[in-house]
Length: 361
Image (cartoon, rainbow, N blue to C red):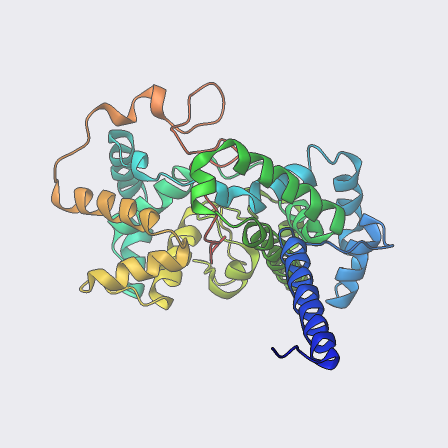
């Protein structure tokens, strides 16, 4: 009978230890990856914002008063805005209820009252009056509800989104919602990936907010100082068509060339919407191009679908909805009840779902 050498036994033990050590390390690594680690910072929240403004070569003095106002009441300002924007993807939007008798009646009236501007837009940009009327209904009920969140404060709030303490708070709230809602668990089964998605969104939103503050700064420098005083949606969109500042800068059109575009003045609103859609490839003869252009306006397909449905009914007199647009189903602020999955956040038809961020907004 032969016995293994002492050297062979030692080697076997060493290999076994190495294998065990590797297994332990692997298990430890997996435990560490179960949750995202958020590194802290020595900066205060105010310093964090000021550093970001300087990095983007923005004049902090322009936004200092608004920053002070944001920091005075966190619950009513940045905490609310950040939560609405960053955790909206946990719910799904439902635009279908915006197709209603009220939508059709209001759109027909809008077309009658703005026939001249709509005719100019059709001739110049090739976008039908029905499409413009339908879009503006879905956006703000033709300007009835354009938002109540101070525009600059919204972007300053979103600039804070990647501050470590805020990121931790968002992950905690999102995780609590996920634990309590089986549908969210099913959509996001992996905890680490779920938390990482939130971290990534905070960085994306913060960087995007810098771009929008730069656009506001440029618009102000061009002479349109009123931009600093505007209110808008919690997502930073303003005016009747709900443009974000960078879209205003690149796309807004004034009917009167001597004046800057005013997104609360209907001729400018109509031309600006038509110009945007045309730039995004809108072609009345190609249905797919219309869907794609609307997707660039709001990157949720159901949004474009409901606009096209209203448009087709206005054009062709197709079957009209039954009592969907009654007073109990309207999207006004105040005592009227908002439809399922539509939040009353200063904007009549802004959906809860923000999983796909808008181009215009």
